[in-house]
Image (cartoon, rainbow, N blue to C red; front, side):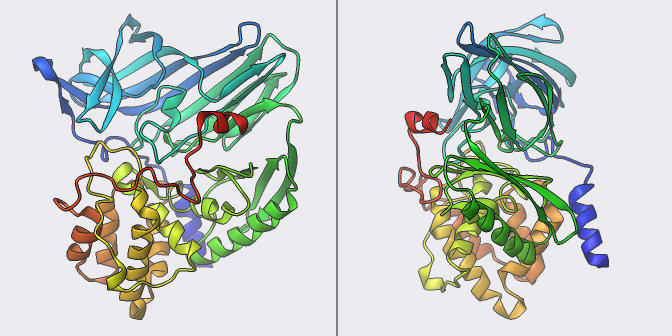
Length: 446
């Protein structure tokens, strides 16, 4: 019991959240302009208004951030900014292409080190529909594509950073009631107006948000009694029978808690969409078939959190290894891969994780069977690093330390593959759990 209490305290009272320690290197810009620098978001307040009379949605964002060196502050926002200011001075927002790997936004003014306030306005047009007096909107995300997280809709930082996020959501121009499904703490302020507060450990990949007309989906609410005694509220919704989802949620959470400890989130939200598949902190959009895979990501991906695309392979490898019954692999089954050997600015997960990554986990389990196997390590890794963004090098280091064995040869060949593989492999190959959906298919899920 004493150990369990210590684990729960570690999960729910950890006071320090990530800033710049996992950020990529600053960028020397062309034409001797100086540096573009990554910054630490402290707080982001988003005012989101859906206007039915105009058939448009806009976000007014106020972001407090800190930079530790002079330069052009980097963040990201896929839509164009309509207006922006820093410390009450009007600025322009520009785009920077990084080594052909990704692109980001930056504030087109050199800022001295310190705390600054960015105010920015942009239209939201992705995954949104207006029909008559109703609006449907969702912030669907995708870790298999570049710029696939919250930045599709709102200004955000990259995955390395955690910060306090607040939404104020309002629908104007209609008296038709709507509702939201979210993994934040939501409060109805008035008809069609909500506040939503998200925990300080959330980052750009964490947020689940779905706005829909009231009653558009069936809903099933219940509670799950965690091994630590908490009654965790669960909401599952969709346009199909939900009882199967309830049974699968209960059985999967029991399995995961037995293997890795108390469920790390304060609530569970499941959209039983029948297609798609994506994980969020304590939430998922999923088919019934993929649900256990997606819930595993509430431990690995949205529990212990990859700080970059180069670390994204780990959670997919763990979840896929679990899907395969935690099957052990032999050394002869492993293949060279560069899952963690891409540019430090990489922001998407290498799809080799589902196959080569899962087999690597199976080999680690086989290698350390006599010392308790990989699941024993994964539980320790989760308990010590929950809600702490990490890099593959951290996983590598912790694995060596836990089993007291050097693994440089294995990681250099099968994970980093420096000089062996030039680019991501099979990035267009479909994943059974995270299929690549068209824009029309994503809108159909609204």
